[in-house]
Amino acid sequence: MRRCSWVSNDKIYIDYHDNEWGVEVHDDRLLFEYLILEGAQAGLSWITILKKRENYRIAFDNFDAEKIAKYDNDKVNELLNNKGIVRSERKIKATIKNAKAYLKIKKEFKSFDEYIWQFVGGKQIKNSWKSLKEVPTKTEESKQMSKDLKKRGFKFVGPTICYAYMQAVGMVNDHVVDCFRHNEI
Image (tube, rainbow, N blue to C red):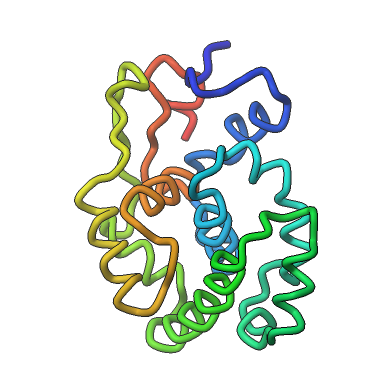
């Protein structure tokens, strides 16, 4: 069975690749979770975040944006002392800010799903890369998404982070053509 070459032998990475990466996500809470985790990953490896994902779910109230938007300085300090997550004050405060911005988008649009999927015209972009070297780190769509998210108050949403997010939530299918998941998704 062939997989994308970025997948290591780590079971958590294999499970993520085989079951999640590139699969369309339309659940608002899960879309928010992925956006926060992609931002937390900035400057780190994705495997680091995957290994901490369950800790993030516990620490951030299962990514309940209503609760996160109400976090105060005491909660920030509690999170800064939580060894199960990335203890970056900037990233923790960005998560709170992003929760507030996310809730505003949900009020403006029917759902976060409707808002975020507009950047790909509501349907998955299916690429046909032959090798990992061909896969871009950002695209015009991710640049537009980044610009709009930033305008709406989001942090840690640069074009590269947005493209990784688009890959994660299935807005693009970037499994290489000889990967078994390419045609399954």
